[in-house]
Length: 155
Image 1 (cartoon, one colour):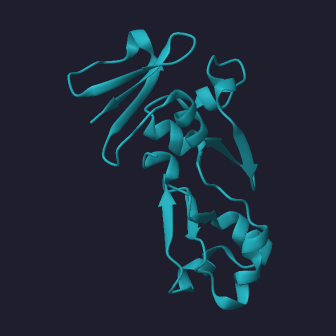
Image 2 (cartoon, one colour):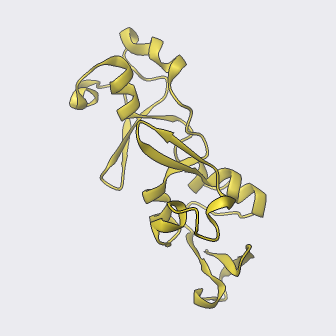
């Protein structure tokens, strides 16, 4: 499977971790052996199985985000307006699966890529849009979607 949908496979949403533990927002900064990533300078994620031992118990009740991405980050990575994941009236809205975690909306990119057979390498650029608006090149792969939409993966 490609890199993009697997970005959060080994991470927990920090907002959920801090809420379940009742710890302050910057607490993760003091956990030396707990790696974290930040997406879009907005969402912080803590690596699974690295919480301090006194907080490990919370991992059993946290939401698994494997295959999911926050809709803002997904829209940036797919070079498409965030509205495609926000409004039911958008033609591709129902092609995706969503989940909310602590008021953050996530989209299941892995399921979408699997259903359409889309393969993306780590350094590839992906563009989702109406077919008439996509730019084809010799080193790209085109995937035809529903409702006159397509995805181009630039290698």
